[in-house]
Length: 213
Image (spheres, rainbow, N blue to C red):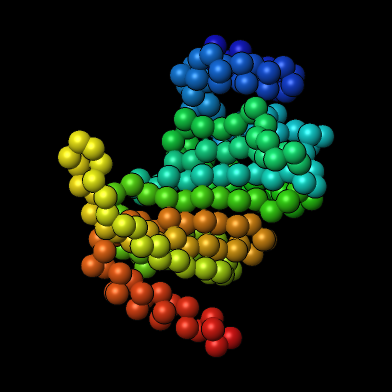
């Protein structure tokens, strides 16, 4: 089946896209198997077939999500149209396959097609890395990016019936603007309430140079 898919990708990208969208709805396991068999070069052709130049431009934007459970982030990719709705085609269930090549393709394609700035959400599962460490890793992925916000949100504790107690906590979120205008939202973890003061000090020290700029 994989050879048949690759032949279709080369000969008839529109028919190939129709097959991908169909399998995404009916048999995503087979679609995942096909995607995992692609070389990086073939995968970039796969992206071109899913998101052709004549169907994107000003008012459209790419949306990525990175879920960073280990050394490499897993990701999804969608396109949101001028009407605010997501297009049917998407990339998901591929783990960390060609993740940085995909990001580079999104950034280049956004500029070439004069699309709206791309957006990304980044998160990671517990146990969370220290906020300064995870934020540093994210900044390293986007040389020239600037930190535009760093927020601490206090969450009240509550009882989740029948008898689960959820302790008070602090959500830590950051926003970055990439050098090409892309917007990156980063969830830096949910921390115990007693960490609030230490996190506040870290936030103040990190943002202080910006306030003086």
